[in-house]
Image 1 (tube, chains in turn blue, purple):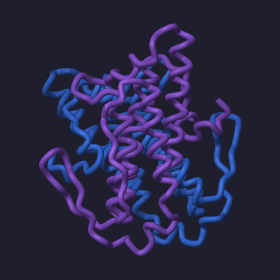
Image 2 (cartoon, chains in turn blue, cyan):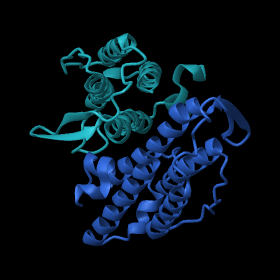
Image 3 (tube, one colour):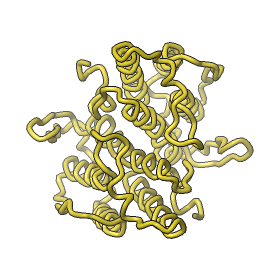
Length: 162
Length: 162
């Protein structure tokens, strides 16, 4: 699910890059867009989508995930972050979560707090909603910016033939 | 997951209702808000979140889901739709999906087309992303309207103590 969601996110950013070229503005202005002044910009939404998938997988599986600097300033760099995250997810064995359903996972909430949940609940009620939250927020930002996306781009990405 | 997502959606709408009272505008103007002129308004986003969860569950389980008129014009009516959807989901036995992973599911795409996928892929790559897509879009609309929400309201709803 995370691999599909992030691949579709990359597909949406690719369409945004092409749309900016058509409309003759720098695609990198998209990186700073926000839905509200007190919401994080597009760059952070992409980073958090990637990290939610990567760190959630690492915490449940016990595998170590690569750390990434939060220093992207262009759409191309954000695509590279998605690609690096997908490359790491590709290394995770299909059985990495087996037998770990009931194991407690402790994870950060905000800057100063942590929370502990059994792994299955953590995936179902924290990680999965979180990944889709941030991918959808990027979609919303791009739609509001006039990028030619439809929900099928979010759901099936490249498979949509776009 | 659908029960949690829809309960949290109801929680966000409840905060929106209270926020409108504080700011002295009719909560029902929120129902018509759109992120972009060619995106569906908040009322439709709530309906589709409910229907994605309800109809996805029905198609995989073989149970029959209630049909609902798409006629809500107030936040209170949208809350009732969420409550009716949750009431039906409560009647679905915990084992309703057991053994159905590989069974083909055919579902509508848009007005004139259908698509067929095995039930497990349908849930993981269509229904679940779709539910979170529409709940997140409502969240985005409410945040943009100045409602005092944080991601914790989306993730843990009432449990957040709000």
